[in-house]
Amino acid sequence: MRIHVLADSDTRWKWGAGLATGFCPQGEVHAHMLRGRSTPTARQMAEVGITPASITETTLPEFVTSPEVADADVIVLGTVGGATQAALHGLAHAFRDYPQRPVLVTGYVGVVYEKVTDGLLLRAGADIVLANSPYDTRRFRGIYEPLGIPGGSVVQTALPFLEQRPYDMNRAGAEHPYTVCFAVQPSVPEDRKSRTYLLRRAIQHARLRPGRDVLIKLRSRPGEQTTHIEAYHYQDLAEQMSEPMPPNLHFVYGNMSDTLDRTDLMITVSSTAALESMHRGMPTGILSDLGVREAHGNHYFVGSGCVTSWDDVDQGEAPLAHEAWKRDQGILADDPYGELRSRIDVLLRAPALPPITPYYTRANASGYMPTLLARRGLNPDGSPARGEGATGGSGSARRTSRRVMRSAYQFGVQRVAPKLQRWGDV
Image (cartoon, rainbow, N blue to C red; front, side, top):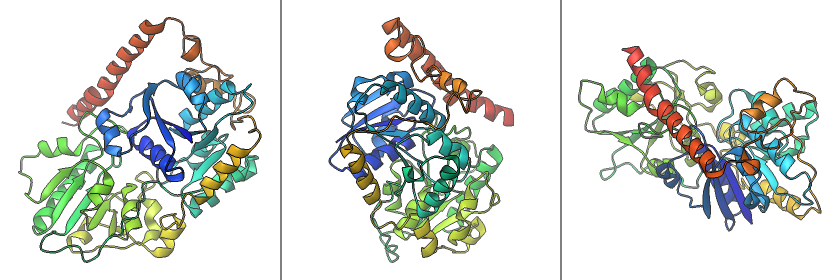
């Protein structure tokens, strides 16, 4: 099976590639990295640990008109909602005269706790919209069906990075110090004061518990970007502190699963790493220090039994998630890819698939769709705009110009903007 994954960041590549290898372990997976602010670096790609058959950096018009994509069996759209909707329009135009077309799959990388209706309608039109849990399946169908979108397009699965590595409660001992991992997030919280507070509490915990190892798990290195912009990198904040770091505190990078292999207690505000640790049966703490707030996403975990604070962690608390909550959130799925595998098989064996019909059209969203598509290089009918994709005119000079502009933009966003923000706080 030929599976082509379009991703716009390292996290969405991890999701899309993990999904592809999950429902089809012997599949031929091709990576298409959408050119933009968060295009993953080679280091970030390697860190995911999945080697694709090919890697292409692309624009959306180039992707939807690619002959390689047209030859795919399955296309996984691992992109933000607006890019997904634009891709659906572009692919609908590209395959309008094809007797056969690939199966289109999309979904969410992690916990869905904000802009639920907005994000779902931007994904409507794919053959399969994945829900990561029974809870999400109910929510998604409850939004689609009243609007005339087939609820059957929602297929229940689970996050592909939930690996079967159960945690051993008796693991800590003389050869393995009890290890607390604080999984940070690029934009939760966003402001310098809050991020400095969380860093200081991790440092304080390391000093209060010298027999423990305290890991600060970082998503990206200073200057790199992931799905969200990280203005105040924790390692930069640590370097600006006058006091030395305790010897049992360590900044770590790399694959989250590898870090969890050495962890005994996961601490975070609302990272999807919490779902990974809960899946293993590992103690997990969802921090309430900055409030339990929709803006932080930790409200999603209210029913888990894991909401706690650094004060409680300092005193030895190590919460375990409720089993019923974990099952409803898809963390304990017995066969997470069974339904998806069956649905894809049925669609691939069908004599013909119906035309791709995104929810938003020029008829029901004339003040929205043309602008959304134009920002991504497409005309209102989904065709590449003049000078984009297969209809482009000036060849290598145009591509070189785009690369230069992209490099300048990324440098500004990733390097200059965070420094300006930090200077503004001084």
